[in-house]
Length: 593
Image (cartoon, rainbow, N blue to C red):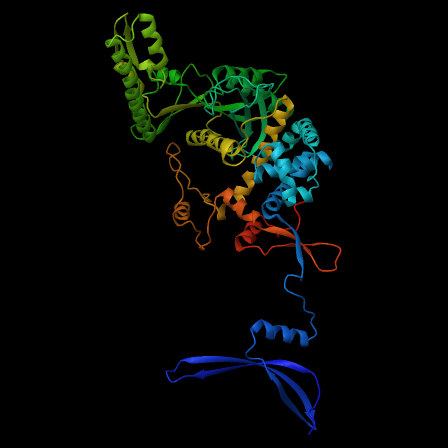
């Protein structure tokens, strides 16, 4: 009987067999078969046994018989280009959600460049030239059309930004300091510094270096924040500007530029001095200004010592049953004084003083030994040497020294040390806010909110944005650089809040029953830190680590054989990458623009 012709197909047969030991074994076979009809019956004919062929060869035969076109491995498509995408896309999404592009100004080339500089500062802080070279290596430069920008365009965009600064800050102030969203009508202000490279910066000067770079010139800048630490405005000053002068500048900006006349300003004891408070009083009393500026600040050590004298209102018995008490004094008319004592702070200050006194003793003992051995002689030379070291640890006030041409004697001023020790752990806040608005505990908490602005300084200077050192020369360029960092800090504030479940951030810090006591982390935050995983066993990362992980989400340009165009396709996101975008309420976008 002639063989019946017809199409063939691949059939896979799986059988299970149980051996004598009761263990199941599975066998798989593959056959090439032809199906045909004989009369009314359908019959199958095995053409070949494919069981000995590799699985991928059988799959190829099956696909070919089904009409699929097979191409050699590696020729299906090529990846023309692969660029890091996830990190810049996430930051750009947050920028759009916050309305940052519209906040910067109308659409134009300069706005695209500035937005790219802000996003880059969050993702990969660096100099403008290194950022310019980095843009073509990420989807940010491609999508915003800035990959081919020149240095002249960058500097022109920075000049454009400085001209827009007041308008930008007005919107941020209205968004976060207006009484409708800030019912406590409270704002924080503090000053910091960053050192400068080169010798030609117009603002560079020598002053008190908060970075410990005493040999470097610096610039200073003050940041205005809402009570939660969201930065809304910045002012840049020469490096030798005093804190009170900077405070006067921000008060003028609040009144004239931001058109606010009803605000409580919170600053530290070096910022809001008695002279600045007198100026605020005069401003409030001036009928032409009609302002109502309040303040919360702290007293300096000499003023606290004056309150603690025998006839003063600050006596240790105030703290027998509580850690804070409200007092008054004629030197502070119309103000409330909140005295606080923190036992933990008292113990730390006592320990530190003890260590520094011992260190100063060792320095003086070394000089005295040189005098005894006659290797250092002469009252002038001995005095010069003592002067170089006695106040190295700020303890010179606690020592009496007697110097002759051949001798050096010194002793501790124990009475002075004991008097200072009595005030360990005590600080006094002064405020113009009445008790109906803020009770004593709320005044303490409001002052402690300055920790939020200190956190912003850490973000800007060290942790995330790497503002320092300053490489720019012109005043407007320095101001533009600092403003870019401020706007990047604003982005990071919101990103950190959104991504708190994926990082070690304390999502729900406990409320303090005692506002004077140190802040504590929640049990949930301690558990996250110990396990390095969240309650659902997802791994935790630092904020910078999460951005680095998002950077592994690439956008690939796929090119198929014979096609003229590339197709952009994202790599398969990891669960953490998907979750990061879910937390900022957006699907993973194909572009960063």
